[in-house]
Length: 430
Image (cartoon, rainbow, N blue to C red):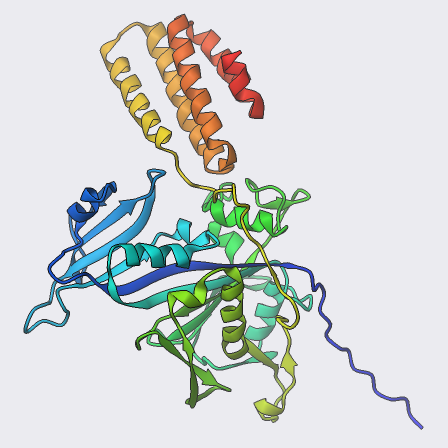
């Protein structure tokens, strides 16, 4: 009697991982109260700082951004349809309102946005677009994302639903290296994307990474231990993302295809209430992934419903999502003192133009460069100590101008000062 054939069973590599799930885009279609236009002046009267764009969009005549309490953009509004009235396409009260990307990474983004719309009496609200994403370093069963993507494009696996694909990568002599795949047509209610998020955040120089609030989420989930360099134990971490884009042509509902059959569908609720908190986000992501991120191990000549599933995510059992501490802001938030620094830089430039003493000009140039460099190299990469450094720079500029220090001493003080780190405030005030 021959030996029984053994099969390798896929097992979950880690059941205690913290899910890095977020909203990455949140935009609604709504209507303003009749006879009460919610233009830029309306929000100024409400006490908001508003920045208007000189031109609108193809659909709307007006576009402006409502600034947050930190002096940075918070809400983008497009209103006053170009084609409205009796013979127009849109109602005069129609508007599109979007939360800026940075604020989407709060725990309660949807809830706060819902309150904003309610407080300003918008009606007929429906989500026109929402992106839900999950970041990870490896799949739940241990698969490497880059290797899985390569094997998928080699047709080792076949996807259920969304037959249209668009892949991006590099073709080298050694072979192709793909970093992004998108499934779904432009007209689809739901599209799916899988891509290397670390690569997307990296600038052309390969040394600076954008969007500190995303890197903050990665640190809170344990993916990295160095936000500035996106590394863990000194090695750069490749974080991947699966993202679903949902567009609702119908009011508050989105249709889901079943088993790749366009005629077999059911509907999911798609309102702001559905996305209150990360637990709800993960529930929606899990539901979408069962339909739009489902793969089979391809076998030639075998029907897809009889092929074995390729297991990637496991949402069974209790799930854990990351959350911000109550006293922790998302990274990249501004501070109104930053604007004061911009004014200070302008004053230094005016001083430089009106004074001709080379020693003074050199001192001003050194201070200006220190402020600019430190803003780029410290605040954007590691914004936790933004306020501390802002105060420190103000004290530094004031102290150095009052002391009338020569340029070589200023340079020496600056070099020493920016090594102090967390004690920098004590250094300048001591």
